[in-house]
Length: 143
Image 1 (tube, rainbow, N blue to C red):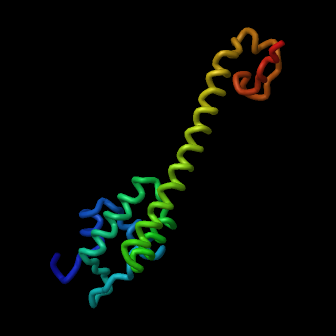
Image 2 (image 1 turned 180 degrees about the vertical axis):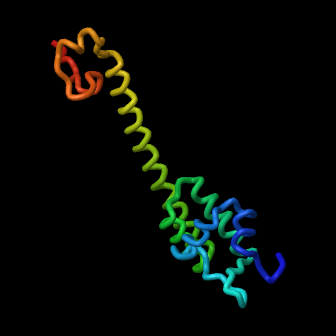
């Protein structure tokens, strides 16, 4: 890390975070404003490298940038409040994922039903459809 820091391209290579994203994270408040060289190039620290790795790891758990921002802000208050916040966020995420899984299962079942009701082209030509009979055909009423 020469020059008392890393240029944005070097930071990007080390972390796998595109330079455009690094700038966005800076604007969003996830990264502190970096020091600048005399020629106005940004200089990032090892702490920025670690923070970007943390952000990527947090995103891998489904956390959104606003949630990650809250964690980073809360971490300044100490380990206990930060861990409490993360526990709450994880519990909320689990509930969100459970709801999403239910939605996806419902959608999968609807698609399977549609496949069972597939309209053959010969049959489809007998009725007028706006675009596609497979989507427009309503479920048959069971008696």
